[in-house]
Image (cartoon, rainbow, N blue to C red; front, side):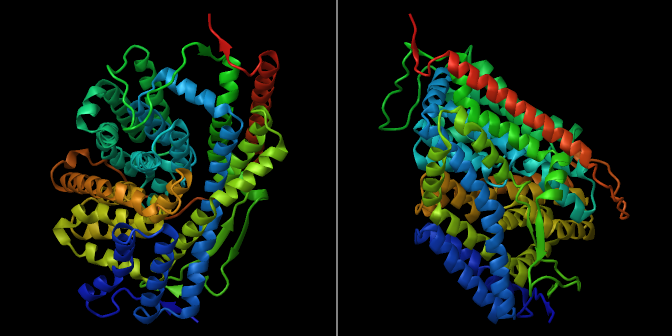
Length: 589
């Protein structure tokens, strides 16, 4: 049995859009007005979407159930798998006592909450987005900030907002790769166009973040550090996206801004150290010092994590791991059963890449560091069980959110919302980022939003005489500011920031900032389309005939061998230093 998606079930687009928007509006109402818990809002929104899909759009009940199950399965793996592993790694660091040394190190650089947020949420989070993506940056950085003593709401909210700058180039540039594959525009011009939009946001984002934390006046007090952070990040993001492509901007800009800000703070300090209201004054003890070996041991979880996620992002390693550790299967009763408006059947294949998933990289990092930080594997197993218990409600929320996303996509509800924006004619470039924002809000992924709408962006731009790379890039850029309010992202941040059951507070914290940034990107895109045409790159469309490249497995095995040697050498160094020096802090004379 084949079922064809319906875009305008009432034969009246205005009425159809009003009905299609009900599940989306319900989520806003449930989280902002009713202040529901995340999993409750997600499950109710899913039921509402399913009712509309079945009774308005005519989607068979069986397909609606299977679509939800497919989404929930994707929510459990790889999304929940990654979140569980990220929080597990952080919990290991805390339970071993090593995080106390990390806090001392951070305080030695700066005890100022404003600057700690820039280093961890903005710069380190961007680096993690470039290597792992898919929720890992928010999960890890929010947990770190809470561990440092940040107010949990501010920690999670700031990490969500900071994550806007790097999302377009996340996971080694996969969102732009997908936009290229769907639209037919080469990767580099899309990367260039995005790299001529987001750096504007990246320059102002550090000041914006600090203003949210401490207010405008207190933000001005650290303006020199804010400018160093924002300008270094924006320049490196612009340069790498325009001249190196979409794979490395986050890695280069994230690391570069960390180095620049830490170097600057060696010579400049704010006049006063700012802390949260009612927070005790910093208790940095200058009489306590740690050896280089102790510092290396304390940071080893995040050092090994960084090495692993970079390695897992390399294509030769991915290919080897997928060749021996991936199971994929067609979703029975759903695969090639739904037909889109163009008559194409939608493939529904689940890929269980249990070796190449980012969560597995973090698991291996955790197993490597357990003995390095002074724990036994028995203790590690106990911490893992407590982590699972800690995340039981976030796992339910994420599974429900992804089930919701798959129902609204498969039924055609999302396409109805997209159709009305595509009919805005001359003003379409202004609304092009809204499509990306909508796609990321629903799916939680800029990659998925680009897969959904890049072709529509291309075709609509052509029909109104605008260069399609402007609107396709706008889909990518608009999506990044939808990430902070996506129910999936909210659930991840709440889990990491110890805000389970308080998702509505986190949503209300970020929602206005999402709309403010979206408006800025909408006006930038409109100006690019009609006023500043000179910044649009010149390019040729991809050849429709694709060359099939046979992966060279030998390179992947060489890379894995090199990774193993690197980890063994690092572990041996840490264990040797640990034996030479007692792990107690030494008193300085």
